[in-house]
Amino acid sequence: MEIILQTIANGILVGALYGLVALGLGLLMGAMKFLNIAHGTFIILGGYISFWLFTLWGIDPFLSIPVVIIAMFLIGLVLYRLALSPLLKLPNIGMRIDTSMLVTFGLIWVLDNVMTMLWTPDTRTIMTSYTGETFRFFGTRFSITGLGGVGVAVLVAIALYFILIRTYFGKHIRAATQDAEAASLCGINVHRIYLFSSGIAIALAGVAGVIVISTYSINASGGISWLLIAFVVMILAGEGNINAIIPAGVIFGLLEAGSVLVVGVPYRQAIALLVFIVVLMFKPQGLFAKRE
Amino acid sequence: MSFHWNKLLIIGALVIVFIVPPMVMEIGTAVMNLLIILFIFIILSQSWNLMGGYTGQINLGLAAFFGSGLLVTHYIWKAGIPIYFAVVAGGLSAVVLAGIIGLPTLRLKGAYFAIGTFALAEVCRIVVGNMFARMVKMPGSYAIDYSLIPRYYLGLIVAIIAVAVVYWVTHSKAGLAMVAIRDDEQAAQVTGVNTFKYKVYSLLISSFLAGLAGGVYAFLRLSFHNITAVFSPIWTFEPLMAAIIGGAGTLMGPILGSVFLVVLSEIFALTLGEAHLIIFGLLFILVVLFLPRGLMGGADMARTWMYRMWRVFIKPHKAVM
Image 1 (cartoon, rainbow over the protein chains, first blue to last red):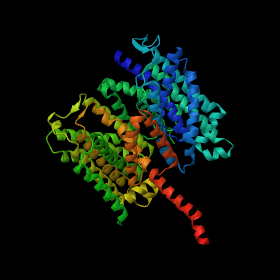
Image 2: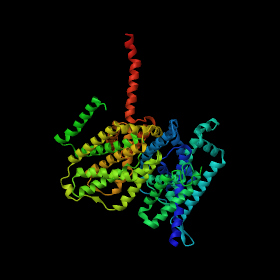
Image 3: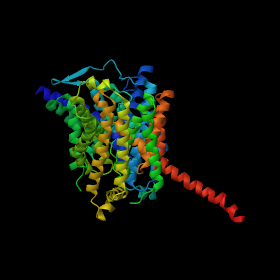
Image 4: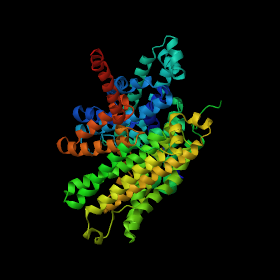
């Protein structure tokens, strides 16, 4: 019994992080139809910025989040201006998705090696005074950093929800998502909306990176595995269904934690990915898609 | 099928340039190794090209086919069967793998296909990493008469086969269907092309070539410290880069791209170290953004431009005189 409760607890802790990891990818794909393969690499970059702030100035990772958000937001703006905005000229959406995939794929190459040069290929983590501390609750243990991650994930998701639903900016994003041409005819500056959404998406990747480096560890070429998780969660939630991403992440986390009980740790990721393929084949619109 | 004698002549000359020298003179080990790696890259990028360039399905799972070809070739060769059969068996094993993992994913469209193949390749990497925890290596007797010459010729032959197969497929009816699928899948289906069937053909042929490339690599390297390294996404990404930089959807593009990538990485790796990969990444982004048809398309554009310049600046003078 205890082991099952512990598994569920682990699944939720990990799953909230998985949801957080996928938020930026889901926003960029849902709102603009840019498939950002370099998403995992941006997560690692955010982690490294937090790592620098911690080792150079001793800033706590959770307190460094605002700084990381600002830095990554600016990087997102540059990314949109230089690499993504030329793709808007392409004739159809399918080509935009494919080409953005290839462009950001080249970006992985660049960023991976820039990061290797800046921060060496060593695996890095942040050891604060409370790393490894746990919190007991009815016989199950929660790690403090994991709980912090859940808190940040929920806060970020709520903030994103309010931005998208309750502000004019969010309304403009949703309008541009539905029909960019009609939105621009209504007087919405679609390019500016896209610019800021890219910034927000990359900033979300940065936040995820901070949580990743404080709960796990990162190395310069580790972006690919986080990218895969982000893909899986995004597709489980359904493309463009940003509000469902955190629940989808928790489901994926529970699935992964549950498969540890059945097949053991080594095949954990393989099982989760196989389930993902099955979902992709039979329910490509995602688990949370609204009935139409 | 019409023959282009000029092109055939160039290809023949190239083949002779590659076949004769190793027989008559001693080429350094480093150069031989580089050439064999180049052949492997040509095979892999042609394999990716058939699927990605001609059929328009971006396959991010090439590494799984490469790796399975490598593993099967390795073990069959170890069992004492001649390497040439082992390589073919490796290619066939990749076809079987494509049948198992590729066919379900082919029902997915566009970016979902890319994500699906990527995920399945990762599953393969994890499973193989768990199955072969120790170093995979040949017994010492295989290393006694190790020589690069047969490896060189095997690589060359397989590379020629790969190019020929892609040429033959793309100049057949199936090739037309594949290009139609790339340009507009729905329209192709409406006009009566069985799109799923031709996508399957494309995937199976492409995976066979990737498996052969794995076989050549298994012949070249006798031991693998960490077998997951041959399943790592880098074996998908580098051929993809070669194909796209050279020009996806052309026959010469992937060859040009492979030469470009392998030779330049050899030159830059010595002088620039890590930084050369940054240059490749930037170059790749620039090619994708500004030369959608790669270096081959760039050459075409330059030719038209020069022709136009010639017409504008030189011809009028002649007309006046």
